Image 1 (cartoon, rainbow, N blue to C red):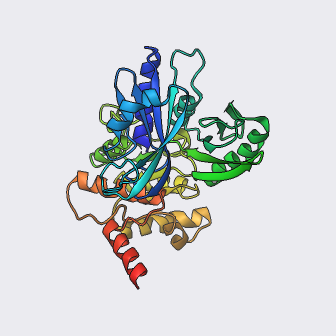
Image 2: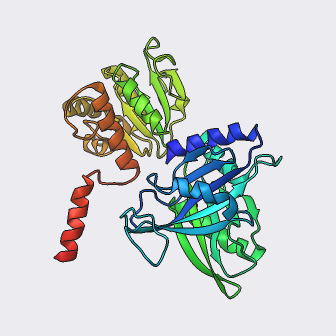
Image 3: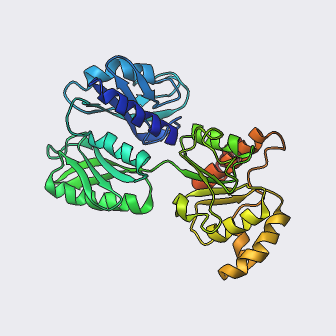
Length: 379
């Protein structure tokens, strides 16, 4: 949800200057089918402005209408049933056969101190710093009220512990540490002082970082699409007349590539994505020499596989690798098979493959997955 995260942070910064009160709805639990997953957020101002979504568009109006009076006494939890017809519970007739649980709460921009939730979101976007957010979402214990939360930064330090009992704090600290280690969000049930409580442990990840090595015309739609996804985009090329902000207005950084240190000045690091598309053999050799030793989340090389093999035959021995080991570290040719076409189609295939790799998804058509599930059930 990187693009949503960026929009929420930007809107929050704008709203702080007006001191307009804000309500926030967060998906904290999903049962059955749901359009949005846990961690999705929607912000609603008193003036009616909405940023973000918690469903496919079916719940937003209902939540916006009721969130203000529902939260008059503090944060609350509400279940929204999306079955086609359910006489026993309020249903929205969507036919999704799911239940979406939302945490509804208010935040106050007029408060002189930064709001801890939005501060964690801001750090995620601006500093690329992840956080673990552990929030009470169900409780029968007065020492752990709904909406009470603990926020821990990637350094393990607590940045916020509002309304969290000291004994519960120690337990939530270990949960937060596990969230940071696994980078996975989860609902967790535990017992505190003889009463069961449920926690939503969220990994708030920075937006993906994409580094494009090459600033030719085919790099422009890749950068543009990645920007619309909310990713942080950096572009570098040894040709300074191509590596300009005017050609890549959505990129956070545009730089002239230093072939003596192609990766160092850009700050590329573990887990980041990189695509090499300079169309220059000499540049590609220098770039892959620098990138192959890094523990990247994705590395792709534009062009025929034969060309990449030739480069790796030259570079891999210098790095103490075999060409075969080096090839296993990257994708060549780059992108998914979406059919040949325009630079925009190629960009879509590249960004789609990066998304599938970073999220560890198969990228197979969803109807294939659904058919396989039905076959497994029915034997």
